Length: 100
Image 1 (cartoon, rainbow, N blue to C red):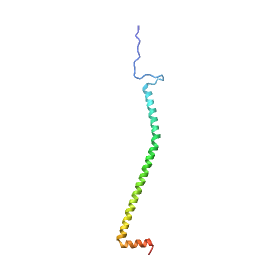
Image 2 (image 1 turned 90 degrees about the horizontal axis):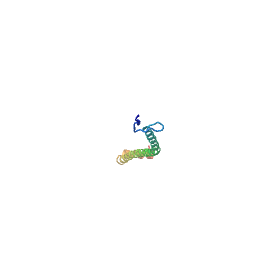
Image 3 (image 1 turned 30 degrees about the vertical axis):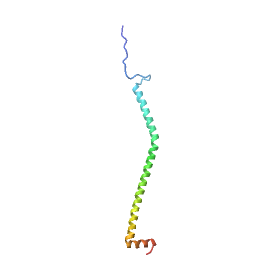
Image 4 (image 1 turned 180 degrees about the horizontal axis):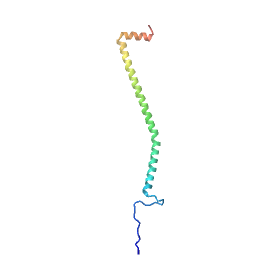
């Protein structure tokens, strides 16, 4: 009598299609990762655009503030010169009144 040979036990169970469990799990992992990435792009893209536009607005406002501060320094120096320098004051009056 021959002893019946038992098939070797493996951790990978064959599927009806002939694919091992590892490849099936890898397939589902890839599908879930792609779906998560697509969902992330759909959800996060508008928020990133909103934050970017907020950053652009902030940069524009900072430029405006720097420009206004420069003008303020220029006006303060002009006022100081107008108060202390008679020649400058006379020239300003002539320029404003358009006298020669």
